[in-house]
Length: 527
Image 1: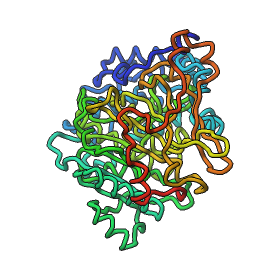
Image 2: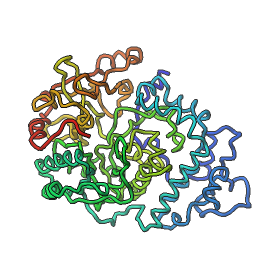
Image 3: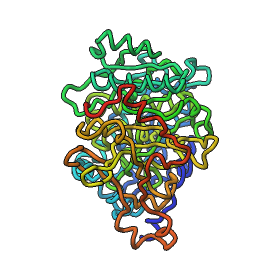
Image 4: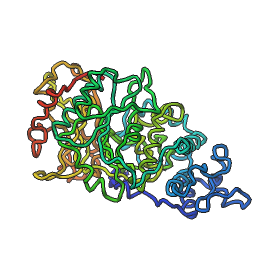
């Protein structure tokens, strides 16, 4: 157990596989994941010669699971155009991944993600609320159906005339995309736009909203006056009565006129001009041209997503926190755009969309990660893990984190490590207004002393949301009790939780920020 608990977190490329899988590799992979009795999962072209012919470079799809979805046991013709060869090969490999029942997968996944660690890292509300669904509602037939649905989604987009694979010849340049439209999100977005202007941002901005939203002409004129164009999203509707309408995000990025996109949530304000992110080595390295920031949890070993995607459980990566995304639609040899379409489909309406996929996550955020894993794509991660930003309760002197603090991709002049960059106040809108005002809103940062993204001891960082008697929902964290026995003496000395006043942070990244937040219309409460 000790060796697994202390697993070193590798970058995404460490477990990425080659795009064009040979027959031998596919066969080997299937034997690795399956019992001998499950040889029905092997492509039929290896067991009989009297079968339909697939594309010369692609094996026939396994008949036992896909014959009802693809009677010819090949990808749809729309995906077999020569210009889509790379996409077709990745999709074929995806459909050849093992399809396992819950019982077949659990021992293997727990070996790589032992329960003591998984239980500590998972969102406990998700585990309690969705564990039964993962066990009872995601069988082998359902997995085959949902995988086939991803293929058919791309087929439909192609038939509708959409481009599904990006290219270097794509026009559009770089820009910022935001989404909102109801009263609260619109007011928060105006604050974000005002702050971007204060930071001398020159990137064009597109604001997407649902149909029949953002109808106030005064607000529309204010938004245009701050340099943003207003666009109505198509292909997705707002869900009446839903807790949140995450589904706009994927299509907002996909439908934007920009080839390279910095997406920002309506409650996410950068501390400095973020345009440099497009030139950062992490974004440009290996032609991935996609960066996703980490959230506070990791997927549980029993989460059905591992079986749906055909991945082994791993502790290598955090779940995504999608309040900020940097992506080039032409990155990963054009497949970033295909991944965006897949993620958008997972957020879409109906039984093949969010009604199913959101059981595996808490909204849109990890549909991006799963879409990238469907296509075996790499992405970049920031050098540092997230911190919590907030203040101290006046009554209990207890830390109340209401903001996710995400870090830069580069080290600016005058700093020794990447400083905070994104102030994503995702809980500030859920707090009561009592006592929160200018001077005590953004006063303290709570973080791990060793916070490199790949730091193995971060597997013992335990974050949770608690309900404050006055303020409402607050974020806090500590070291998990297991650290007392699992940490080395060196880790016990160097890895700990620290609370720091923002004025004591290197380089004074928050200088003037709180004043600007309130001056520009910053809000507490709302939705």
